[in-house]
Length: 555
Ligand code: MSP
Image (cartoon, rainbow, N blue to C red):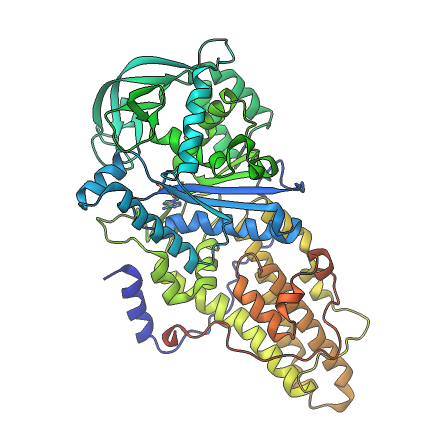
């Protein structure tokens, strides 16, 4: 039984959801280091995820990065307009690993890739991922660019004036799981530490890329933040690696059938990482494509730390050789384990996004993934905590706040927004703390952003408990105070809904609809206008709707 299905069984048994108060753990300030570009406003925004290997099925590790990228894309659309944001994801379909998986399932590799790539597309649909494009490395538009890159590299010279490419004999180790060359020192008891498998010994003639000649230029670009690596801890790791001196790498493979042929050497196909990295440019139509001209250089390449080395050393060196500007930033988030263990097929603890969405819904799944731990750090995901967080943060705190505020407005004011008095209670300053919100989103501190929002949710719930509208309603002389209290609650909920938009788009829209807005028109307005306090107008009719987060046992 899948981990999610067994979780569902447990939930069904648990009839009463604990009325857990919002945890005091909500910590309002942050001392985390900020990205150097964190507060700047670009003209366009291009964000990418890694392209995922099709030998695997989509799991919540892939979903974690993709949801985070989606939040950023949705956020920047509210800032720059939808046309000025480009969000790319896709699948990595060549190489030995995919070839072997296809062989094992007895399917032609292209058909195998078609089926698996569709699984990723479906997974992203269920999670409401708003990618503008989905690139597959077996598409012609991509192959064409890889061929272009080979031809260009063939005539290129390094910063030290030597040819970028040369032929040599590779003799060493290769981990098929990583699709990467390994040195003895990278192994643990002779095994690849990630795949727990012995690498194969390779001896073959290949094309090499003279990466060693890029050591100094890359160090310079990274140290001067021309090419930004974030968070800082990862930047230091990369600089440490570069300071040891980069080694030349084999960029073609002999006898690997499932790859893009090297145009000038039919005995070789493109090393899968060189093929894969090019996706970020080929999806834009290559160096002359209209999308390239509009969106390149990428603002953020997002990934986990496992593949940072490829993006922070090989990719920028390749780009310099190809005379393509470097991406502005590479951000490597942490890796998570599930209930303390690495997610793996053999342990049977792989959680797929579909099961999670069936259980919690898409918006809640997005929240559960991003609220667990700091985005740049490693962490653990506890499936049991998912239920508690769903109940306490979503159903009890946010869901209940919206439900009771709207119900009380119906009861006391016939469902129309009451008039506020001019002085505004101090407790609502939180809701307009958009600068704190912007700061954390732009620095990819998603758990912090969610804390900013939940501070508001908690403040509203506490305000209701202090003001006791049900008591004010019994006293005719207090009608103005009651109107004032209800207005401020409703207006803060409007701000909360706007803040939630990139994270939980359906919930955000449902709340705005309940506040009486015609969402499709309302969200067309510029965000700066929507963020102004007082946007909720007196007399607007509320529209009580469905419960935002149904009890788990009824889902
Ligand atoms: N195909 C390469 C990437 C090429 S990009 C030019 C690849 N694919 S992968 O399918 O293995 O995906 C790795 C990525 O999946 C990680 O960098 C991360 O974005 C995501 N994650 C997979 N498992 C994860 C966790 N357990 N925790 C966090 N992120 C995870 O590498």
